[in-house]
Length: 257
Image (cartoon, rainbow, N blue to C red; front, side):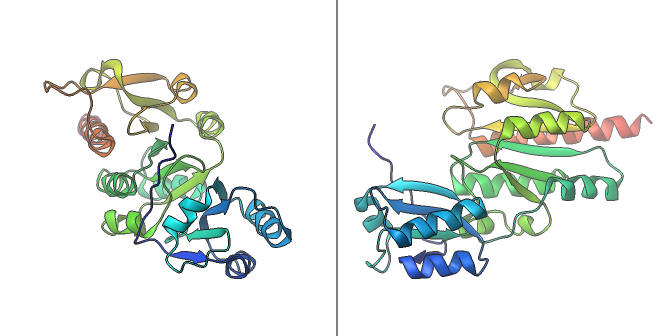
């Protein structure tokens, strides 16, 4: 399969070995590091050590891709993308739920790659009253400037956390009382399910959907009934439909208390 070149012209980038190394050492929030294949000299190894300490995702790519991404033409084999917004912790999400006196409601995104989708989902999470959004470190969009803009300000109010392993995080959250439902075309109709209580809503990748391991750790799957001629909804639209079904059921549950 040919390498797919996806770039964001609105994201802040740092190019060049010295600039990238100093950015790491100064504590800048670096979202992603792109390193030219085959570069293993001293400065690059120093950058890679700093990236490992910071937990930054590293992509080894061709020189042609770096040339395509570069805005200066002097990348020296390394380009870093800065995070446009600080990540929060899962504890912050639990604290927000406790502050509101509500059962925790988190969105877990299994490989959402399109920054516009991610921003739209964060916006939906905020409007649905979710207490946070959880992203994996690898194979997923991060908090770039495009995402912040697409969230329409919601990122300022809804905590977003980044985790190394989504499955391990789900196991930890189960121990803290959450159960999980994922959006899946082969699942039961969402409107027939009980989606109340402490819940994690899992939304999968735009093309592949929820990965097998993540799906296996969900308590059950839900499908959104459709009547059209294509086979699936956009990921951010699916997140909206399911999130607001959770909102509806929570409102009904409260009205019966």
